[in-house]
Length: 257
Image (tube, rainbow, N blue to C red; front, side, top):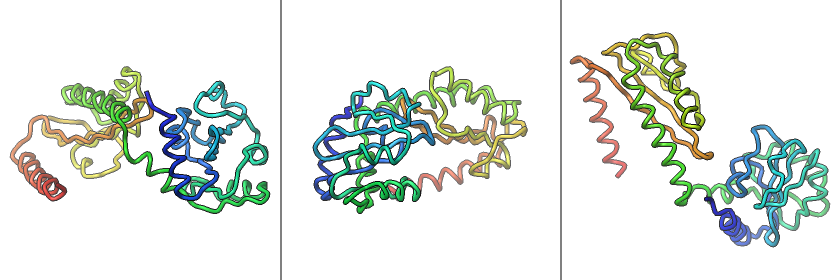
């Protein structure tokens, strides 16, 4: 499974190189990356790093899933004031300027004594997540494999169905895989397939309908995102369109290489 100790060691080394004594992590995905604990969206949660000791996770009292967490010391606090008093923030403090709200920034600053939130560090925090290790790649592989299975199954099911029915069938299949969707499933047929972020409706899918399926699955908090275009029985017009777009795609891929 994920090596959180190695991740934390790597982050502390980056902190030292940047001249940081403390670091406040406020993005829920970054908290998960360093500890394995994923706060609920909108929950109060801060992870405090210092270069010397184990990180401290500050969450609200109802976040009882953090009880007994081994990758960080969990503290249950009612507000930022209580966090600032107990966090032991030291010296030069870094923070994530992309996720820390202005109101929280001002509130934390108010309760610090001699220290100040001085250094924006979103790039320092995020760069570590940008390079995936073997365990992360494995989780994404599981999500991709499940996505491919579902798309393959639904391809033979969709004739005569409307877009919304096919989308709901996909989402049911995701639940049967004991996973969850990473975004709302898109099924776009006919002229609707030209719309990038289309919401599935009641348009019926025929044999010659060009159908775009855009879906994703989450496996242990790692996502797939796959888009596929189908036409069950293309006529000359659909075949020509397909060939033209395929040529453009192959040219782009060659240029990328």
